[in-house]
Image (tube, rainbow, N blue to C red; front, side, top):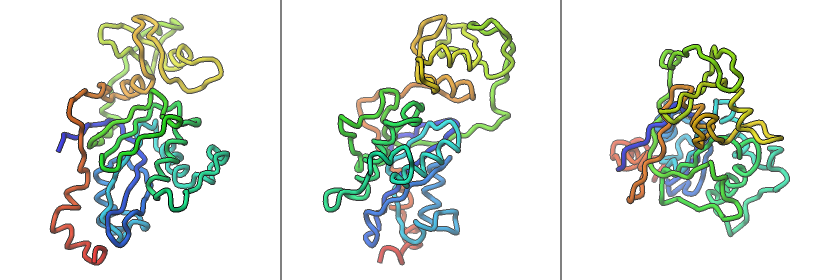
Length: 274
């Protein structure tokens, strides 16, 4: 099993798939700040904090998670829209419905996701699509590809949520764009040799094309390096922002394998599996 990637300040919306023969094929969409803890709760039941819809129906696999939301409100809105594609105003024009006898429940949920990532406000957020179980991987059709700044990753993940006391102190300085003092929310370049220091609002205006309100990427005013807005915000919060490591071997994930393969776990699930 590959080592999990650590993601700071985690807000994610996940897709569960049921592997219990009695309920196989059912899915569940939820929100979490800790994927490993959440799959444990779902598989153990409501007494451990799991959802009523997944209670006594396990084991479940967390096959996919979308993360990188700026806060819990943004993630919870995404969760609700994914659960209710015909109720959210952003997707009503598509009239999304499962195709009888041609589309499984999980295929429909992934098709809905591919449409969501192409409409606002989600198509401008610094999100990441992460497949935790490669056996369930489905490539988005060419006409529904996610925007180029939303990468698709593979393998296990571990959330590390920062406390306020862990955030780096802000040193007062002058903004390189407006030349006024910066007292908070100072943004700096990802290039360690660059001395850029700017207000968040100044850099956002510098990056934004006319008519848009959420930055995606742009060039540093000083060193001209290409910067992604999501990486800059993560650095501001004290998070790690290292790029994905390249490897010749694909990552595999057995996020909840301990609960599926462990005999003691099955002793708790006999009623579901028989």
